[in-house]
Structure formats: structure tokens, C-alpha cells
Length: 318
Image 1 (cartoon, helix red, strand yellow):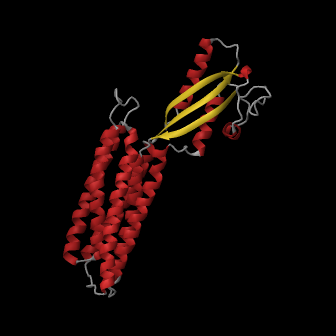
Image 2: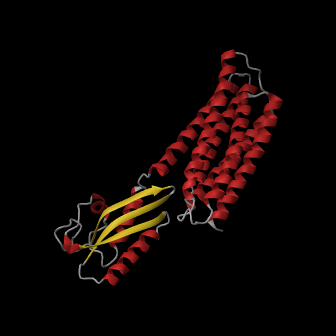
Image 3: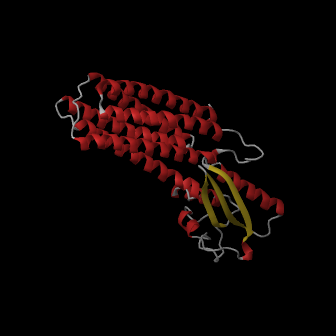
């Protein structure tokens, strides 16, 4: 299945699962008056709303390139993820307000409901399955929105467990455990929001990709037999994808056609990396002495045997 079809399918699955959990938790919360279950219902409602946003956002991001967006629409995804974070923060704040008000009042009705325990157990199992599924698909297709959703589902497992503890404790004669559990749920919700913001800000500010990927980019450039060195290697996020620019050094007696073929081969080798969108390669005749010290290349070149014998470059070791 294509990236477009996979992401849309996952988005619709998330919406259906979260809506089902909201209905179940909401019905139990109305029946029992449990703050912990109510907080979980609010959490599931927020999940349902942002699942719709994700479906819409993934629909836009998976549209093919057009005249106005020649590189596609993937850069919308970090904004979708930040919208998710706003919904997460709002849900957390509402739960804190409700559970805090109950704790300050000092009067909490005891909750005894096997149904509430069953629904929360179902939520733990369901959210654990959604976490693993969304994380796998998000990493496979390089989707920050789905990875953010996976993190939210992971924390939902913990918060549902806390709510379960609170309801069980309340049924044993400790009613204050119910709003206390709701407070724990709220902290978990807010923590998820922080994680989502932290992970997606890098996509928006053009941060560098992980060090392992930068090493692979340098090594792929130096693997070409005609490339004697490299410098000015720059890799940065443009949305969830990566743009790369670098200079490679070749022998100056190569013809224009040969230099073009070398450039094309290096571009293809770098763009074959799954997360790289575009690579821009500038070919320098090494005799002109345009080489500049580049700590990145020195650190990531596997052995230096791709370099030439010119003393001008510390990567030139044969």
C-alpha cells in the first residue's frame, strides 16, 4: 500500500477507536460520577477530535506535488502535530481543574463499579495496541504526526492505568484516590503535549537530522571512486524530510560530461536514503584549492580511503 493510503487508513482507525472509547468512558462516568473515568473520557474526546484533524492533515500531506507545491505537501505534518499538542494541553488543563476542585472540596462520593474497572482495562489494552501500531507505521513512513499520536497512545496506557488504580482504590473505601488518579492522568496528558511539541519544533526550525544519518550521507558521497574529498556538507529538516547540500572534489581534468555524471551519481546515492528529499551537489576541481576544513567529513568518513593524496585535505589519505 502507498504512503497516502496507509496514513489515511491509520487516521480513520484512530478516530474510530478513540470515539468508541469516549462513548464507553462517558457512559460509565455519567453512571458512576467517577472523576478518574470522567478524566479518561475527556482524554478520549480530545483524542477523537485531534484524530479528525490528523485525518484531514494526512489527507493534505499525502497529496501529490503540484505547480504551487513542487516538493509535495509533507511540510504540513509538523503543524498538524502541533495542533494535536494544543488539544492535548487543553484536555490536561480541564482534567486538572475538575480533579483539583474535587480535592479542595474534601467531599468525594465513593465509587464502586465493576463496569468502570472493565472499561479502563479495555482502554489499557486498546491503547497499548494502538501505540505499537502507530509507532511502527509512523517510523516506517516517516510520519511525525503518527509518531506524535503513538506517544499520546503510550501515555494513555499509563493514564488509564492510573485511573484504574484510583477507581479500584475508591471501591476499597478510599474515595480520594479517585480524583488523585485523575490528577495523575492530567499530568500524563500534559507530558504527552510537551513531547509532541519538542519533537516537531525541530522539523519547523530546520534542525539537523540524527548523527547516524549525517554520517551515512558523507560516506555515500565519498564512496564514489572519482570523489577525492567533500566539504560544506549541510543536512537539515524541511518539514519531516531532509534536504542535503555538499561540495565534492574531483580531478580537474575531467570533462564537463564526466563531472556531470559524477554529480548525478552522488545525488542519486544520497537521495536513495529513505528520509532524504533533495540533494544538491557542487563539483569542485580539487586542484583549485577550494577545499575547506570540515569537521563533519573528518568525523564521519569511515576510513579516508575515498580521498586522494593531496595534503590540502585531512580526508585525503591513501
